[in-house]
Image (cartoon, rainbow, N blue to C red; front, side):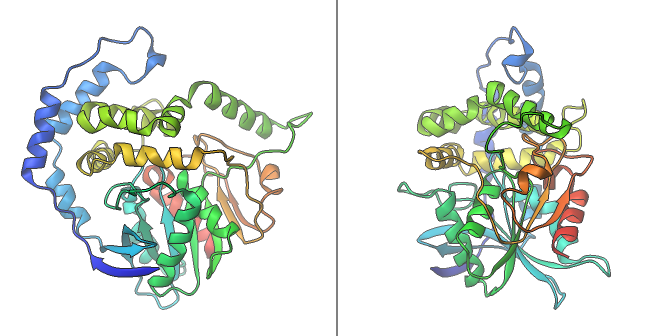
Length: 371
């Protein structure tokens, strides 16, 4: 179901920003950690949040984002926010791109232009970039049930509601699960997908693993042992963690930036290929829309008695494995799940937030996949 299509503009008041500034300046800080492995450092976070409250210009960001063609629509009884930018090219390929946590539609801002208005000889795309349920400017579900499979169904209705009888889909993080679920369910009109976090695992650990298999197994083991605390909390007690994050912008920034610094290809520089102002765009959207609990709740929805292995897909699948992704499976594992791999890319730069970190490489991967 798709109804009530409305043009959307972001509109936060100076009073909301004054409140943000007041809360940062009046925040109470913990002592310095006794070991760097315990989380984001006090010194670093103080520097970032001072910049956030004193120098960062949200109103300029709001004006810039409002230059994008944003809309909302009722999709399966939930108001969904999305960017919908059409190409001038008559042969453009419709594509829906889905973010994850702690991400936002803003991750894809830098790829919209190159995808919709490419140089001669390159494929063009009409792009649709929705905000996940409970994220940013999409509505917060008032009842349980909005998991990635329900989201996948809604995205199919969104694309059909926009008039696309045939299209492709792309996703990473939760977006990879939504996109894979669209393919697995046989979403009407979906012709191919692209993933930058393929969740494929061997049925049994290989007896004599190759070098690429060893790297994948080591990364998976390290992530499982040291990197899943946020997941356990959000998958079991999203409401509890939400109280603190809804009340403290310092806490909200720390919760997001801790993952950004862990999961990006920063190459020794805290920001690496990212831009501090653009990262604060995402943090500020979480804060201004009070999305801490509702975005965390997506973990609870998706963790109830389910695994994330697979699925086996007959639809054409493209994959890009960025070197600093959380999990970097080798091609031979993917072959058991994706029976029609049309593109396999292994770029030399980039991490979990691929479109955000390396927009040019990300665009090249999509062009190679779908062109």
